[in-house]
Length: 219
Ligand code: DX5
Ligand code: ZN
Image 1 (cartoon, helix red, strand yellow):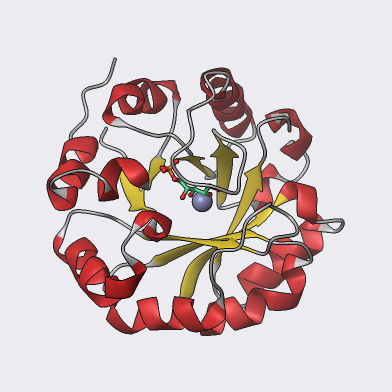
Image 2: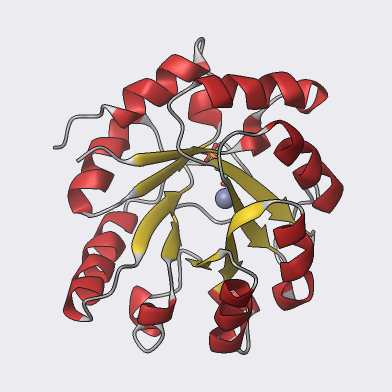
């Protein structure tokens, strides 16, 4: 099975955002991954609602919005209105995760939950049926271009087992340090969606790189 690919616009040329989004439109990318960082939940600031809206103006692919922010529940409607089709909040930022998931779904978006590298997948067992996608961070969130953490493979296997046991429809998304070198093993472990930032945008031909990732051989 070929993975769904969600290129991260964080690694794009922000001075030419329209051109970058048009390149993604023409490519076989399935989503556009939009990384929102607040300088509090993570030690970096990316961009916010107006830039997300600007991306949406040109995008012909669904926006997969990854909120690396504290109090994400305050901004769900704003990001939905800015064009988010998937809204992913961090487990570590949500005191009332179940309520937040209900709110995302009531806005008509798909609800995602991201977990940091130290957070065990088992912590989601009682809410897994409410989650459309689990985003496993395979680097510490905050920056693009970091090195993939290999422990991710076992997290995917355990999460996949949990999803099957619960007979849930939850998808598994992997974010951070994803390249053609680990994509095959990620998919073989059970990943459905691969996020890739620097590997795509720093390649000579980003659209071709997306195509290559999509047609990855299982290992
Ligand atoms: C990291 C972000 C990632 C990042 C991935 O905090 O959530 O989505 O853009 O970038 P690469 O693929 O370069 O690791
Ligand atoms: Zn991300």
